[in-house]
Amino acid sequence: MRTKENKFPEKRLSRRELLFQIGGLGLLGILDSDQVFASIAETQAPQVPQAAAGLSPEDDDFLQEMEKRSFQYFWEQASPQTGLIRDRCNVSKDDNSIVASIAATGFGLTALCIGEQREFIASSDARDRVLATLRFLWKKMPTHRGFFYHFADINTGERVWDSEVSSVDTAILLCGVLTCRRHFEEHSEISLLAYQIFNRVDWSWLSEDTSLLPHGWTPEFGFLPYRWDYYSEMMMIYLLGLGSLPHPLPAEAWNAWKRLRFEYDGIRYIGSFAPLFVHQYSQAWFDFRGKRDQYADYFENSILATDAHRHFCLELGKQFPDYSDDLWGISASDSQKGYVIWGGPPMIGPIDGTIVPSASAGSLPFMTQPVMRVLRNIKDRYGRAWSRYGFVNAFNPLKNWYDSDTIGIDAGISMLMAENVRTGFVWKTFMKNQEATRGMDRAGFKKYQP
Image (cartoon, rainbow, N blue to C red; front, side):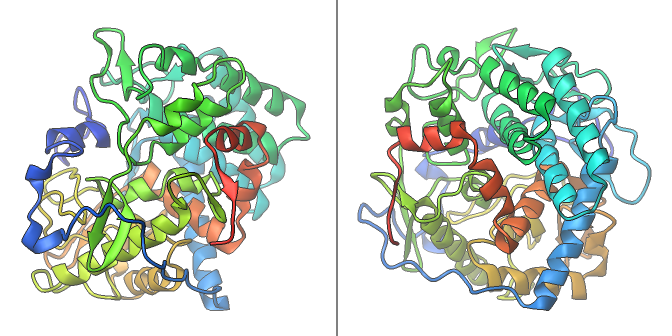
């Protein structure tokens, strides 16, 4: 686990590895049912609360500024030669760390599309950076069966921290690659490189002996023991694999993972024993609005899960008085004691009153006005939480602690969801890819009126 004193350990655990270390998905023993968890329901969710209406001009101005600052992270914390983006950086001083995250790079590629669209940067500069990144990913970046290592040296692309070849982080990267393919579709080399990078990924290798895909693989030990067996951020992995033509997943893979139903404070939804980000990441690119498979409408489900999380934080306000209807949001983040996997319901981790801005920001399309109230309150009342790159990763007003770092994937989910709630740009652009629509079609998604 990374600490302030040791910023570059030999190995950093992924969010998923930390989740399994603190009890694992599906282990009911971690719950305190009297405090945070009502029941696992087997019935379909009740009527979904309405997503908030449109943004005011003031809200739009705020999100414009937040996106612009987040874009600066992805522009400045990248290697111009490789295009790889730092996993995190210190916002208060020059950060010369060499550790890049392949997932942050996926968010960053999408950020380049947003930045060019919103004229944060010249079109030629955006295209040049995308080209440099895709050329490096295709020609020089180490891969295994087309999948990428989770963490890499920002200057060379070589694996660091003995990290795994990661299925979910590769999926996030591919979402960024495909977004660039469609946004810069008039540029033939970008289109070709994106096509080559995507089609090199051998999804059939990942699923050769199982419909439940593994989290990753290492050259030392082979496949990791953990499987994507419960609803989580992994939907993008399955959908991209189903959308592949040269190496597709079997259609039954979509039905293999479990969809547990939870209830909290009368709100019923499909979820996991995991933080709020699991309801956000796939939906940054895949547009689930007005669609459902045989199990659920996942967009409406994320509205329910976000509302349950808000209620959960309000209940925690009895113990931690900083939590209120104007200040809520807990997800995997930094803390005074290092990186922590926490959230709920059900309660995960030693919650101590810490606020994670990306927890609410990543749910902007799901509960727009309640989230806007939180984000504007943080900026207005907690100035040390606002930085050159937007919000710091976390802060605790009860302890007067403010993080010194921005983390790429959290800046990324905040930026992409802000743009989606404003214009739907990422959804519209990404869903032009046949790989995305084919994946959803093979998973059985149909349009319907919620």
